[in-house]
Image 1 (tube, rainbow, N blue to C red):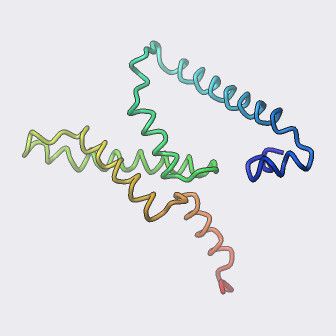
Image 2: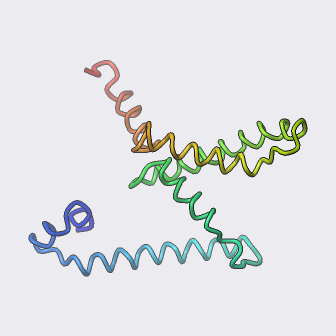
Image 3: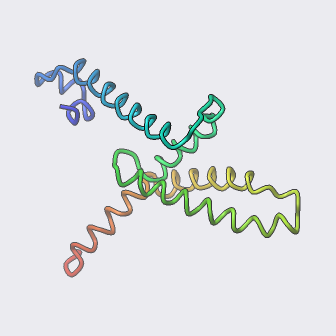
Length: 147
């Protein structure tokens, strides 16, 4: 029913799916997952305040999902892997430069690099890394006869 509602909610209602009920159930499931994620976060941090959840963090999380690919679990994993690797690369690249030029701050390059990555992925790979993974996987499966 959720797939039918995702594709076309009017057509789903025509075939007899209670759209209101399933949309409400989707919000309930999303809220339950958010609650479980919050419980996991609380168990790892002894103190949480309002300053821990900034607008920049929200943008980074949305960017990770955009880079990984919307609508797939692999996309979220690939987006997180890309962000962790890109962040460590940017810090290790800018750290020696900040010794030579003290006005270079690694935090600025981190945000600038992440914004540039989001823009480049939206232009050149709009379906994200998960779609690229799907293409590679299909190519390997069809390798001898890929025509």
